[in-house]
Length: 222
Image (tube, rainbow, N blue to C red; front, side):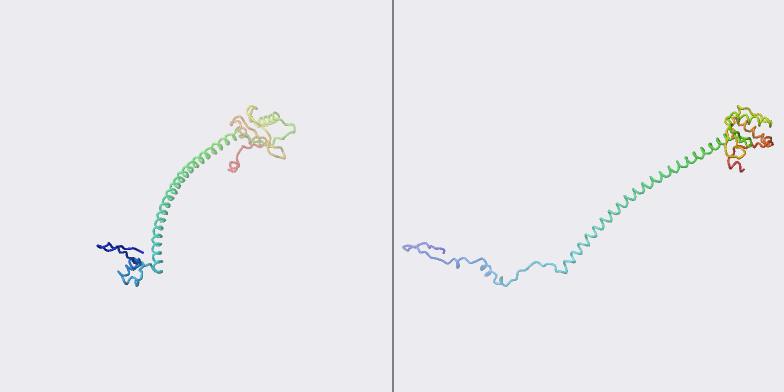
């Protein structure tokens, strides 16, 4: 309880009074109520909140905006990737085309080289065959050797007027199968010696001795 002391007057004693705190100090709320008597009746106002129908609308607009931005970024990325991939593929295709052209050129060169080799080989084989002659109709003996076979041939040639010397014969041997004796293949050292034997074929035929040139199947049919 507060104590109030009033100053004494002349010849008067000091007076002390006691005051009630409840009457002297009123709550701030009471003062505010006196200042605004309608305060108790006022309803506190709150900021307006979006309704349940407004919230989805706002979310949808935001989502549309985000999706639009995302779609634009994706489209740009796809176009960039497509251009890069197209450029890479085009470069690889050009490299492959150059490689194919080079391989095609090399193939043609190799084909021409093979054709030249085949032609040269054919020519050489034909030239070698010109020195070969096959003789048929000369009896074959069991103890026949190269020397005895050459002697038989030289004797038969001389009897028909064909002049062939042992030095004109390079190799000689029997080949093939025959009931009347196998044919004899003669490889002459010179082409003119083989041609001499072939020219005497008519005279040899009179003694049942056959003379055959070394021809291919195509040449023999022509």
